[in-house]
Length: 163
Image (cartoon, rainbow, N blue to C red):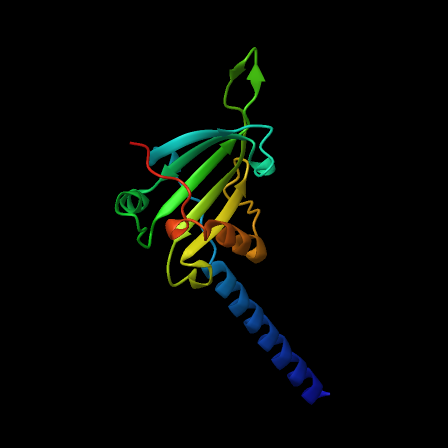
């Protein structure tokens, strides 16, 4: 009986250790919420209309922000590690032919780290729901889809810095 208890204890310890290691590996490659992004450089704003079939989930007003490293990347054409780009997607209600900002739908975040995100060309991707700083909407597969779509662009970035 003592041997069974010892084996069970060892298996439990091994399982907990493996789970903790796996979690720490997963957590280490997540993209953190970009606190204070609205005080960064405003890259530009765009509006995706209701009739755009390609961006059905992206209908609304898009404000794009870049941290100082990303601004450097826009200027040089290649983004250094530490670059963060945020697309703040808002509802765009229209009343009496006037479109205004509505509630935040989500924010998309791109973070450059060549080592952590080597599988996705050096960029990590995340989507935070509404105004939440913790509710993540992407999984590893959907982040890979983001990377695949962005691969058509120079250094994975669609936008350019407004002059």
